[in-house]
Image (cartoon, rainbow, N blue to C red; front, side, top):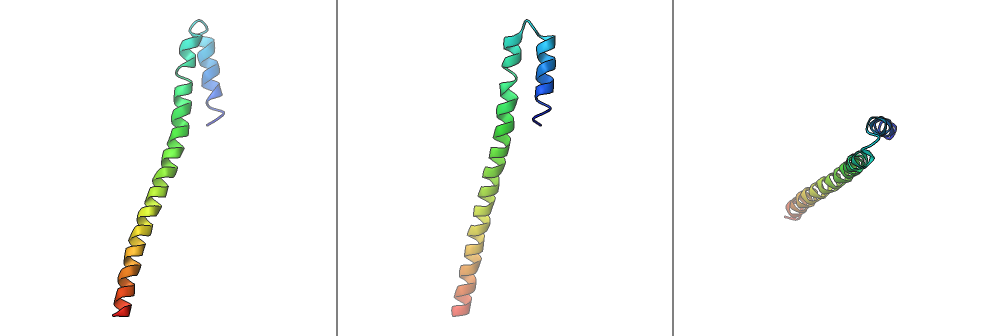
Length: 69
């Protein structure tokens, strides 16, 4: 992914030499999105783990109560 980013940048700059500012704007946008994607994924995984832990705790509690009874 890192290598693919510089290639389009070079091409865009060569094609739009006068519109360097326009080329600069779209460039940081995809970069930020790419970084945000993995972060969201990590957060999603963490949330899923928490849900599983909660469910496991409930099951353990039920089993403990049954064993005690």
